[in-house]
Length: 256
Image (cartoon, rainbow, N blue to C red; front, top):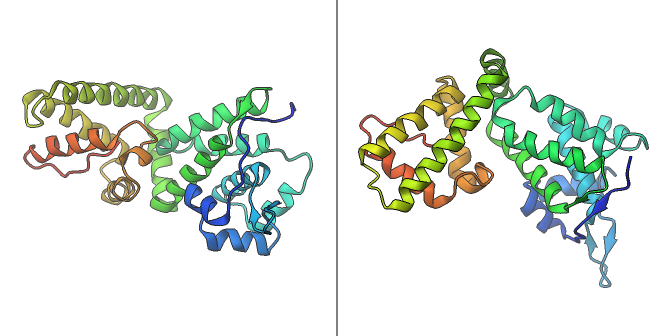
């Protein structure tokens, strides 16, 4: 395994790390107390700081928690010298194949996995974003909903899923083009886009009102740019909201 080439060195206080990752201060303090994750650096004034290796370890903890490992099991895994960050990423990749809503996180993990096997520089920001996205998914989707989405993915098949992803990107590009042209959100051109947009949401949720509600909550609370991982910016989301409001009978669930 090539030595990790970290392209960014950071030192973060517990509050800063919590804010960037979505892991609560209380949880970080608990991990410190049980010896699972402790800040490895100190300032001259004695303040404890999390460094690069601490952040990478936190990403492993968060991934393993999503995979169903207990804290004791995670401690055992991470204490094994042969259990590397790459092993954790590969485990997480295998799990994510089961979930249709996690494709962007899957893509990010694939990039990290490739970097961990090469001498390519790895940004600590990549690990911070992985932690944030993983926590966000668990925050809004219940285990039961994730199981439903897994079953739906299996029913749709990989080819259909890849096709839907391409359709989403095309539709977002079309909406952004209309917005740049100054098109009226109530125009016929935008109503066509709205219908396709809602159809893709229907494919994702399978018509399940609970999953639709979780999706909407994630967008409302996290914001469009964070929830979509950069696919949809707030301006475009506002434009689409106006277009949907102009559609009779719209359910206003206009999230990606």
